Length: 517
Image (tube, rainbow, N blue to C red; front, side, top):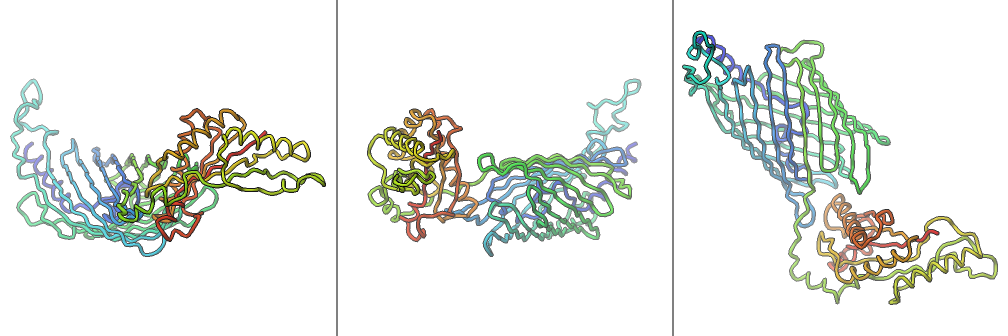
């Protein structure tokens, strides 16, 4: 019995020593196994997990668990300049998990912007791996008790100290990607070289070294119409003389593009590992979460090492907000005395209606703007409503929301700030009371930023600023359905952002009060 077990173990160990570097089917959850440079490819901090259970013709299963963590470094100007990542894997092969592999890796990547919405990253990775043979799941004759069976508490009679090895490996990679203004990846390619130091990995005394692995990844969007997009992808892995090509298509269906709820879509996975197996899968993608399920199955030829594999993946994401920069002397320029008041300009005291009869006031065709009066806001809005109703009796009244008043809320924002100051809070308190007194009024809020930082980041920040005002009014008792929010990012500046004062003025929320009878 002992000789048979040792012989089997020796064969497993030798085979594993020359085993090919394998890839997961849902490799978007295991990016550090594809290319270490990908840890700097997103503005989100991520935590992902992938579990794989692969059945074989031998009647046993290969189980693998991978955890990946990545964190990008964002400059105060909003530029992603580098990223760091950690990866952990536990792989168990053979009956009762005889052959075990555990590894832990550290990745770092540096970004080089080469064009608008394009980056190229250079990454490196150091990894520690431990391989061992575990006989705890097997029994030998030394553990057999006549008339009773095998007793696990007895010593197995085997010395497994020699069936254990560990080593360090080093890898590097280059990764390029192009995204659009919404942050969707339009195209990418990457090349990486794993385990280039070829460490000694023999269990026994014979000379054996780990094979280096070359990986190429490629993908691009070829079709986009309505809610449907298609992304062909290719993953090529070469280890020693073994070549594996994974090619196929990701079909994306957008379920929601709401800025408030964040983007939501489904990814349908259809791929083929040449000469091995097919892959089908489904992933649900939300702004801060992705959940995926896939299944591998034999195609054309029967693969004794993979008669079917199930994979489950999950990823959590959180947008990294750059730290506020210490602007030193320029901060003194942003004092309340040097910037415009918190609530400034625009009151619309005329409402667009259809042309009045001859002899009536023709100014009803235009909007007239003036500085907000110091009179009570409720009284001012009531006068405007009365003016609208009076106009409706002399002409045709439009049954669509009419603008009663516009105001620009200038928070004197610090960089990336969305905090409400005292002057703005006072205006919002008055506004909340006016809304209570006039239930037919509604509010539109549109946030804006300066031009510092990426377009994607500023779009989210502008929406966040408007959302802050909405939350403030809701806390004052205003119904949520009466308030709509939007964000324009840096698309509609008041000036050219050439000075600190001008940039401060562009960091604002524009408020519109609407009336509908």
